[in-house]
Image (cartoon, rainbow, N blue to C red; front, side):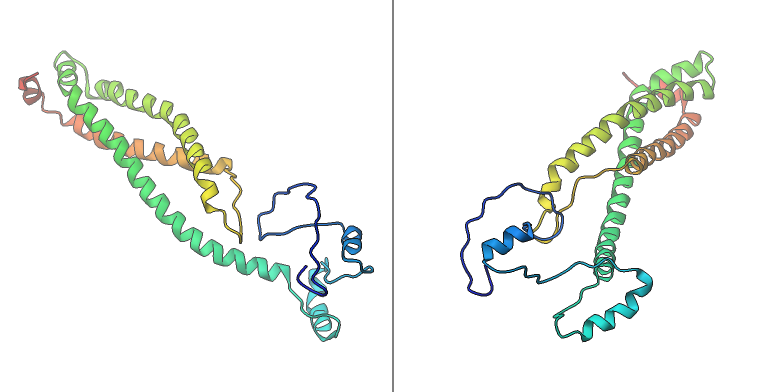
Length: 220
């Protein structure tokens, strides 16, 4: 105990609770009073106050000699959220930006490499009578199927990565629970779909301007 006679107490831990702010220990007040060998002493209180009456109550509490300090939880929480949100929003913006660029690069490079490998086959299809729309449907349809099949695996890997890295963000001041909501998955899937669509448009332009003669003359 860090006040009064400063006794050293041996008290069993009944349970461990999940707390996201600070390092707190909780005990029933009657048990605490018996352990401290004191009466029904209260050193603090949490008040639920009507927001309309808060401006009138705060000056009254400040002038009471028995009140050492007053903390307004809503103001402290607002300040904490604003500070945290400012840092997180900046970090999240760059994460989203780099993630989107990487997603586009991966999808586009996969499509470009596939086009380079299958350019001779696509050119052959054009020569025997397939239209540009038909070969685009064949090639881009395959790209679309692969993208749709890859999205669930990517979401699962993303959750696994978050699960493994989340404990490293825990500190004595605060801890972040791993909560991933549906809009997050929807945003990630939408980002990949947009990257696939943009890549498909670029590849479609290359398919429309495929040099049949040069491709067919190229060596195996």
